[in-house]
Length: 256
Length: 232
Image 1 (cartoon, each protein chain N blue to C red):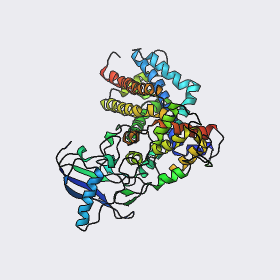
Image 2 (tube, chains in turn green, purple):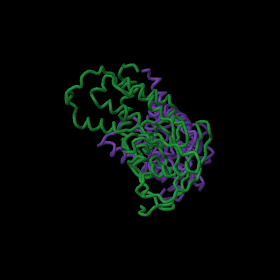
Image 3 (tube, rainbow over the protein chains, first blue to last red):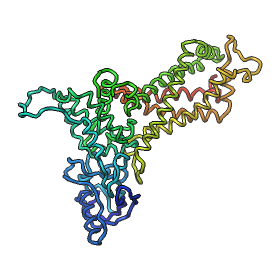
Image 4 (cartoon, helix red, strand yellow):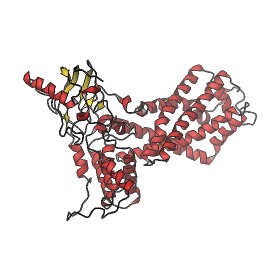
């Protein structure tokens, strides 16, 4: 942990577009405050590049509060960098030392093609959600609170699954680029609640089929996803998804 | 959708096949290891040969041998297929990937460990299984291919084989591969089957660690004990 301002060397992936081969480029950043976030450090670098007339580095970001799931940098070999349970925007420069060399790459997966530099196309996740990650109800007036009694433990588990922000760190870190943690969280948040029951078995079949169609790898239970998830989504969700999938395919007669 | 064939071709189904065949192979290891331990309880080898004779002649065992080979084949083919698919899911690799920060090396190396085990199996099956089932053991112990009880003397074949140091080393190294393969595979099977439970999963994990250490250790002890003549 540093207290004074830092000088750092960055090795950043630069890629003009999806078709470009891309390469690592070295940059020096000077006088970086330890209180800056990692993205603010990139802002400083980009200001510098713009002043010099260079092309600024493109990276995804939105809320910068750790809740939107937009930021997506693979920092020193880990998604969202060296700290547990934080997103890149919530990673601060005090986690690094003066003189450090930091390697920054985009998420790497066939299903997440690079758009430019550090920005990847994660619409594969949107298509998985569109395949069944919702409940079909005619919206009317809002129901009274506690109209549907749900046990506390059940509500908590559903809420924990719903904490997934869809950033894709699980895919990025998985040696197989598997999306099972994401998909299982999106299935679980509905499978645990009464509102999710009518379409429960149809949902799991359709979302898994879409996940496979997108070209994500197969889960081999290394547990890397759970360890790197900024929201602490648990492997229990994958087991639950597997159970629901077997029920749907082998036991219940519901068609997908 | 909905058909069983379709289920097994999905990512979850393919993993289920890996898990179920793996569990079946684990059950085989238990039987194999139990019979091996006969070596430690009878210096004449009659007990061991009797066990081997039972395994070679009982029709239920012979039928299961075919199922075992099919299970092994399925495990290998499916494993290779999954490995290639998973590699294809990340066409551009990371320049710097700190895998050890979030997972164990052996859980990321199941393909490699499995390949080493397959190479070992080629040696192991041609050493004993092919000898006892197909080519015959006559040329291994000269004029007495049978033991005191009149059974085929596989015990003597073993002594002949494990007098060669290279073979002992290969067998012991292979058991390290087996230990690490099981260290991931045992508990992983239950997760794949959807059995993840606050109370039982830690028990399964401990059981997996114990199994992964004890079984390969007992297997490795046999060639070592024979080579060094420890009470055998």
